[in-house]
Image 1 (cartoon, rainbow, N blue to C red):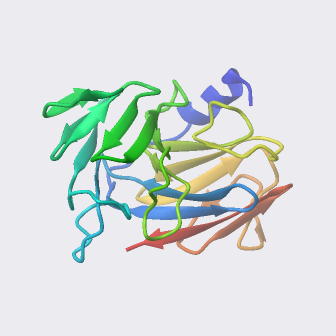
Image 2: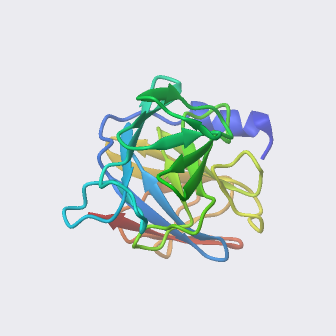
Length: 213
């Protein structure tokens, strides 16, 4: 998708207030992505009470670090040992695109801001540590999330013919694309709302939305 077309998508997506949900996108031939809608997420090790939003199978504190969005910035707060680009983090620091994070002795993540026109970010797993549930990466979704073949998309889908936009409206998650979409088998050329469990299909596109409690 061109920069102009992408800006048309993003400028047309309204903001909403509810940021409490998490969900997974199961994208055929691409992977599984944990999408967090909150302004802040916590990362930690496994805990019976599910203390962390992103709970990794790793030797970490139950709440090891917090990532927060503040306007156009992302800030990381260390509650236990954290390195940024190999340097110890003392309490907090602003994050930049491409920053490599190390939590504890071995968990390595990369922070990404793929699209300059969207406040959404992405965390890639560099080490082998993953959540107990399937996830290939984490998207910290602000109001929009771009999926498609271009490198600046939050989730790169190499075989898709064009990009698709996820956005939030009135507390609901919605999508739109220039492709001819079908939502749960219903023809939805302009896109539409995506309730939990929804399956979206189009030319060479298929994904399912799964809410995480």
